Image 1: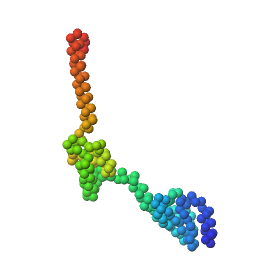
Image 2: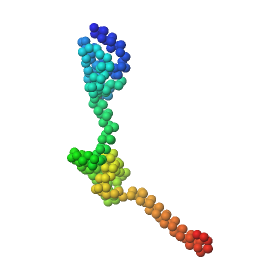
Image 3: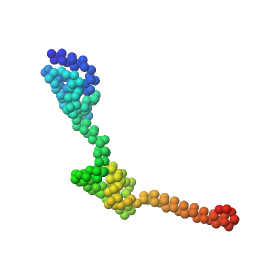
Image 4: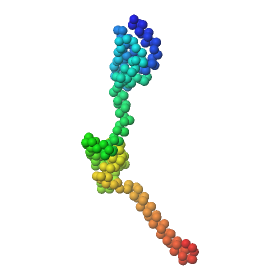
Length: 198
Ligand SMILES: [Zn+2]
C-alpha cells in the first residue's frame, strides 16, 4: 500500500511540487515545508495522497510560498517590509488629509524627531546645514519626506542661507558684472569723444 503511494509521488514531476517535499507516512501524505532562507520547518498533512494542485493552495493558505523555492511566512513578511518602508511614511506627509488624533500624534512625534536632527545638523548662527547635511539627508535618515523636513525646518529654524561656495561665487560674478558696466560706460565716453557712433 505505502509503496504504491510512493510510486504515485514519484510519477509527479518534482517541479510540480515547486520545492515542497511530499512523503507518505502511515498512509497519510505529509508535505514538508523547509524555508530556503531561514530553515524554519512546518508541514501540511492529508488523509490520503493528493497532488500538488491540492497541496499547494493549502500551503499558501498557511502563509507559505512555494515557487521553486519554499519561503516561510516570517521571511515573506520581512522581504515585503523592505521596499514598503520608504513608501509608508508618505501618508504622514499630508496630515491635513488624515486629521485623526492618531495621525496628529504621529505627526508631532515626527516633528520632534526632525527638530532633534536639526539641533545636531543645522547651524542656527549661519543658517546653514553642517558638513553636507541637507533636508533630504534628514528625511532619508528618519524615513520621512523631504517636504516634511523642509516644512519643520522653515517653521522652527527659518530659511536656509545660501551655501558659502555659492555666495562667494555670486560675489565674484557681481564684481565682474560691475566691471563690465564700467567698461561699457568708458567705451561709450570714448566713442562720443571721437565722434564715433556708440
Ligand atoms: Zn524563513
